[in-house]
Image 1 (cartoon, rainbow, N blue to C red):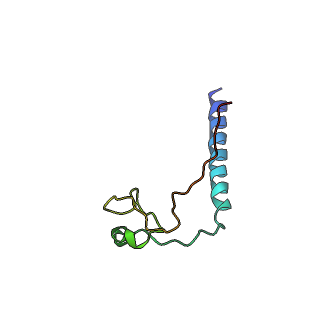
Image 2 (image 1 turned 180 degrees about the vertical axis):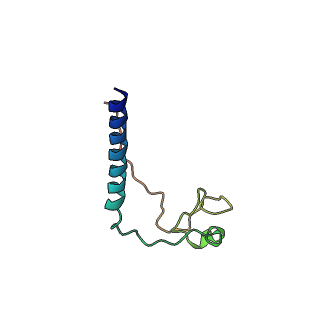
Image 3 (image 1 turned 60 degrees about the horizontal axis):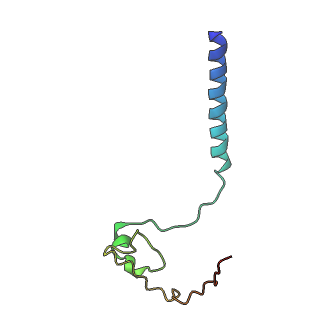
Length: 83
C-alpha cells in the first residue's frame, strides 16, 4: 500500500512538473513589447513624461496633476430615474 502511494505521488509530481515545463515552452516564442526601464532619473523627471504615469501620485511631489490636454470635465452622464 505504501509503495502504491509512493508511486502515485511520484507520478503526480512528475506530471505536474511536466505541465509547468510545457507551459514555459509555450510562451518562449511570444514577443514582448519594447519598453523603457524605469530608472531613478525617469522617476525624478516624471513631469517630463505626462503620458507615462510612472508612480502612484504621478510625480515625486505627489501633486497628482496631469499636463495632458485630453483630460476634460465635460463628462455627460445618463439621467437616472427611480423605477
